[in-house]
Amino acid sequence: MSSKGDKPIRNYLLDFGLTDKEATCYLTLLKSGPNTIMNLSRETGIKRSTTHNTVEELIKKGLISQTNYGERRMIVAEDPEKLKFLMEQKKWDIKKLEENMPDIVKTIYSIVPKVRENTEVEVKYYKGIQEIKYLYDLSFKSEKYFSFADLEKYYKVFPNSVETWTNSFHSNPKREAWDIIIDSKVSREIVSKINEPKYHTKFLKIQDESDMFMFSDYIIFDDYLAIVQLDPENLIATLIKSKHISLSFKALHKAMWNLIG
Image 1: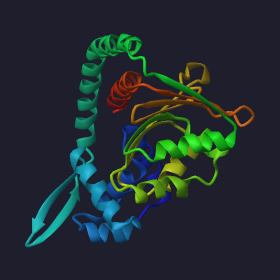
Image 2 (image 1 turned 90 degrees about the horizontal axis):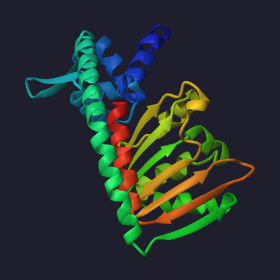
Image 3 (image 1 turned 135 degrees about the vertical axis):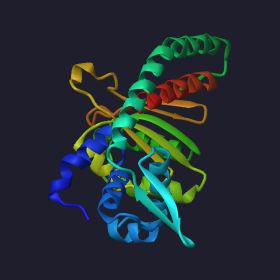
Image 4 (image 1 turned 180 degrees about the vertical axis):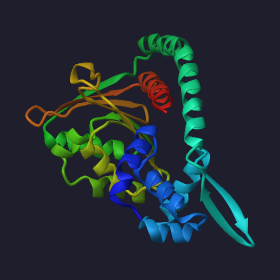
């Protein structure tokens, strides 16, 4: 049910923090009025199980409500005026996060010295496409995966990886991943192809490359931190095994995730 006129609205919703599927479902419900998940799935072309999870996320975000017509569960889009209220809420949340950020940073730094007490730290180095692929495959086997990633660069090096990434969820039903991705049109197109409810993404807008702090991919999984330089002419990576370093970067990832909104 999308049209060319939807594009500015869709772009705003994406900037607001909705995923591509969430924006599609919300726009479709605005046009259709009260609807069922089955009909919404049919109208958007999104798999029913994914539509169900997307609707649940939109309910949490306050953009969809549910009601019952007899025994039928119906969902309905909230009035667009609700976006104003949610924007004010976001401003308040960001202000609160900014106020708490010094304490979060202090907590992270309080953890870091404990690394020195851990004599079990292991550091390994990888070079070349096959070794880097092995490292990513290793991280894909973890149940909890966090990353700061330049997805556009990653898919230039590994152009056929959507299937590999999707299969990692199928082979391990407990697997869940959170990616903070440098925003770009290409990255959003790639994410839209990954139809997995346990794959969570947030896009980080970079105004100027000189402001960019992520010149490498940072992958946190199990007790590991992997730092990968995705330069096709010089593919190298460092893998650090340390529970304390891993916990520190997970805390940093969580703080950044909440700050992005």
